Image: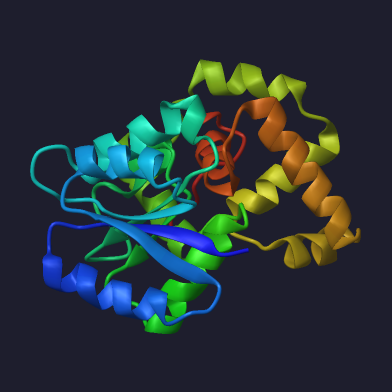
Length: 225
């Protein structure tokens, strides 16, 4: 199956570089290019994109608003958005994850990292490495009191089993299914099942949304170092 990729960035030269890289892979192809968020949303629908590489800062409709539009559209439920940032962690990362992005990637990443990110997102996983998650937690700390809870998120956690909560805590720590399986002494397939059930119960699009819910609900508390 070929992964259909949409490029959304206001810099034509950067889009061209991404196109050459993506089109060089046998399992993916660029199906469109957008210079602003509104065009990205339109093309995501028109070209049946699987993954959108979305620049966060664009004129007019920015990447954050475009990501929210895509994630809130039931007809685009299959589309995964990867936010491209100048720095791996900036002021918009938490907002973009809340808006429905599957993760984020620095524009200075190696070509192999970008290609891997596309495949990971297309497979329904989230681009949240331990380092990126650590930065994400720092943003939660910076945005307000760590003791604050979102009552809506807290109520939704009541639907989870004890084991699903345990797995959610591990996901929020940035651990992979294999790492969680080793920590909890279960199989990776069992972990995947718990993750999928947690996403269904919490209405999360993917792993990235689980991390946001875990911290907003107070299930996991950021540790100040």
